[in-house]
Length: 115
Image (cartoon, rainbow, N blue to C red; front, top):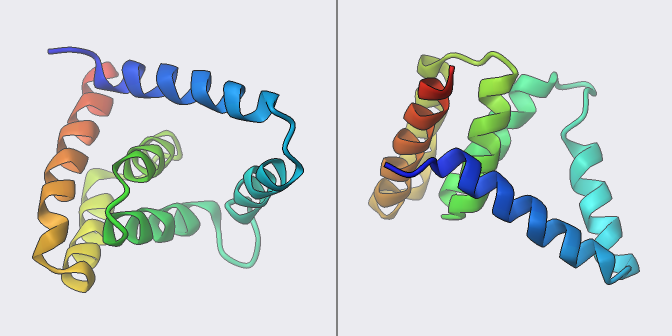
């Protein structure tokens, strides 16, 4: 099995560098806003990551789901916490979210197998 975590991170980094190299003010501000939105505030960072994960799953953005899964993993969230958040996403988003749920489980397993 290919290393889906490394492949995802390498591609994401390469393309983000390419996008940001264009020096578009709007795009750079959106990237900055995204970074700042997930920093510590009234809500703690773990809660914000779970919110981002739920929103990403409901919106069916696999790249976003992978990003929030990895960040959640690095923050020390446990599988049962992530699964509970994903269960809310599936409830809210409906059965259309199930294929994304499958890929989320696969990615989480890959994260765990790296340790």
